[in-house]
Length: 217
Length: 217
DNA sequence: ACAAAAGTGTTGGTGTTACACCCATGT
DNA sequence: ACATGGGTGTAACACCAACACTTTTGT
Image 1 (cartoon, protein in one colour):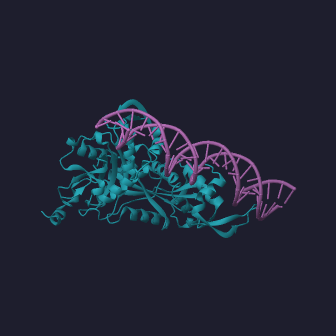
Image 2 (cartoon, chains in turn cyan, green, blue, brown):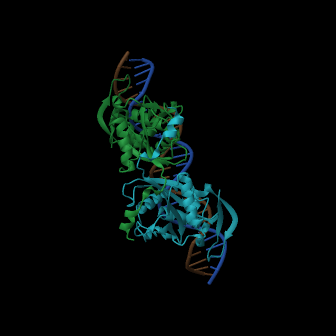
Image 3 (cartoon, rainbow over the protein chains, first blue to last red):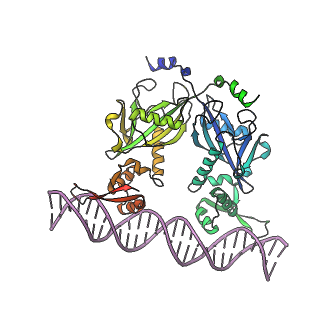
């Protein structure tokens, strides 16, 4: 039997297959809080509860494409930082049937969100105020948070949460929220000084010294 | 309709599903080289080529269980450091059909391997001498190597590649192979000094000063 | 005595932590 | 003038790369 013949005769329906879905944890920072996009479930199971946006993986799309599509359909957002997080495969994570979930996380600056574009049921909720979610989605969010907390120290992902032009106090606040700790101003500035370029613009209008506006290098 | 009724009526076969498999990259160090376990494929596709050990995910086993099972079936090994690596979802990674692969990597000390236990077709090959593999398995191995190179710096995974009792020159060699660079003896010892405890045994028989034997703390 | 590899001490540089202080604005 | 938060300099400390040196074995 040649490889051609083999492939022709191969019947992939002989096995009972799990379903595969993608779950998206889209984070933003709004009102000085880390927030995550959630939808209210219309259908069973867990009808009425909040859950991460999710979609089944189409037979002719890659996982990354699927994640992008899910994000776009829920938010209209494109070109967002999106990264695979972990794949969850417990047997009973979904009571309907065996569903394996490939989770992704994404980061958006509040300034990129057109809140009116969001579907009716999709809204941001402060991560720390979430009580309980459908499926294992709390675990996914916790894991995503952890990943961000680590990656912020050796990558530039924090800049995804800030507008193109920003002040250093703004940026520092982002770091503090993601890391969940207060940082020393002087030390923070030294650490990120090589990742930014200063503009000659200032942000005035406050009742104290105006802060300089920077851009990402 | 209640949730009970909904679940009862739910027909999961309405959708065309991808298959899900687990691929295992089992690394060891043998003859001062990083090696990975490969099997020669008996069947199409890629018949005759080398590939990572793999298995389809059973409908009633978790991903972690599936990975452990695959590892055990190929090697007889249990209680090995095993961690999920990444999930690969390109459309045509397998010519038979759409297969999503959840990859795991594992580390074993050479001293734990009973080479006779290995199935006929499963053997270790030096990673640097691999020419070409079936599917996208070269990518998986490269990604696993990368993960190890990072994780070695802030975890204890390197100790998985060394017997229970070891000398510091041995341990240093492991680090050097994984990191692919020479290390300074004095600095290396300072760095790991808090992860080990010394025994009062010495490894003699060499034609120079015997090295002290240590254990993991 | 010598070769060879094990094992230790020291120095200089770099990055981090903590604090003290100065600066520019609105009221 | 003062309150407020923006912005900078510096000293103490920990960490790390690099090198020089001592120690213990077999021959």
